[in-house]
Image: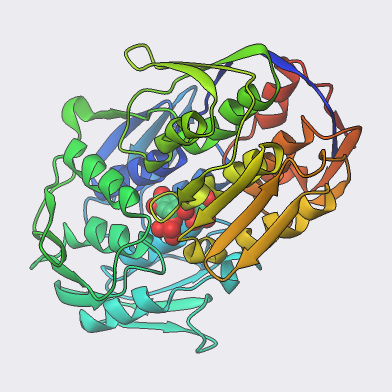
Length: 428
Ligand SMILES: O=C(O)C1=C[C@@H](OP(=O)(O)O)[C@@H](O)[C@H](O)C1
Ligand SMILES: C=C(OP(=O)(O)O)C(=O)O
């Protein structure tokens, strides 16, 4: 699907969708339990893949209105009856690979063309360190993957600068091993707040895991069980970032974003980034509302080491702001659904932005000329599509974006929400 977004003003209020990261973890944690309810889950393409994983390992997931009723596999995933296809979802593949290490038997995992190009080797290597077999069928560290368990637990050394999801996967699986898992990081950890999300979610399911001086540790023999048998998912700050950015660039005069309560989500930093760029906003933390008014923005420097998913949004903001925006510590942002550093450089350039790409940084020289509507590509990446739609709000004329259906990965109602905020989006 291609969408056309005309230069527009936005006004009104919008509810953010539930968090993708918490939903994935809650579904799998319920899978590791005897059974649990997950309230207000994100229903999207990626979280659907994680529901499939729980079923593949012997659990059951029923969608009943706004709740997932999950029968778990009680810490003992069964050998899946078929190949597990994780679609486009890196989180699903990494968390499922961790669970596969517990299976007394073999698990084969694959995904779409994007996911089959993303790095998995450090996780495979960690599982081998725990004594199981874990291979990439092509020997290139990418899916398809074959994992043959079971592991009993133990110690692993793993780099932290490729994906934090490897750590999250080992912690979630490690809790139900006999011996537990000790993770030593051999490099600095990127995307660290996502491990904090994992620790918080584990705690909510009655599982203890801790940060150590050199990494993380989870004791074995633990049982997943949320209080009262249920867990409610909070709102998603990565998704909120597009709506907040839309308000700052094109609010007429303001947009109210609802469902943004203080959270372990690193991407809540979007509010600080917007303030640093000069946005006029109020974050009412107690009632989870942020009101953002159209503002003259100026460039800033943002380190996205902790917040890789904000890069596309910040790049779009930078293209419309005065002065230079430097997005640094961004090398790991190249290992996503697409290489987002080069994707944003190329697509924003088509809209007239002056963008410089470095291996680990994206430098956007905003305000040198006005953005112009253009034909741009979503490149199979939901966040690229949404960030380009935000830039389109302030680009002269109209912008067409290909692959707009990819928003289904994390924010299925994204274009409906823009429409409700007053943007005459057309789809073909
Ligand atoms: O664990 C998670 O929920 C996620 C971790 C991050 O990935 P990396 O840890 O691979 O950077 C993030 O980019 C992704 O969207 C979601
Ligand atoms: C990178 C992302 O997700 P995943 O790693 O789960 O594919 C994302 O949502 O931006």
